[in-house]
Image 1 (cartoon, helix red, strand yellow):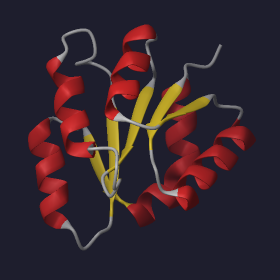
Image 2 (image 1 turned 30 degrees about the vertical axis):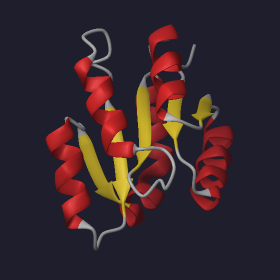
Image 3 (image 1 turned 120 degrees about the vertical axis):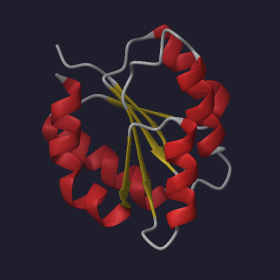
Length: 121
């Protein structure tokens, strides 16, 4: 049985891309709309991965990373964040908050099927 993947992504293009790729790979992905919803969902299940869009305008992505990594029961859950490659300061803030992997949007898009498949097993 595949492990769920949670996504804190408010960009419609990336939400659609993640959803379509997940469906084609047979990987369950659940989208959440806020930091509070993400933490509540993550508590209720053991996701194989949490994906966070660092360019989220309403989702408080860096604070979400910090909050997730502060919880002992979620500390080991892998967090993958993606960002616009020109925003290196945002990448540094995410890493400082405890994010496990931070990659540019282009790499995220290119490797999405592989990322989803790997973390759903």
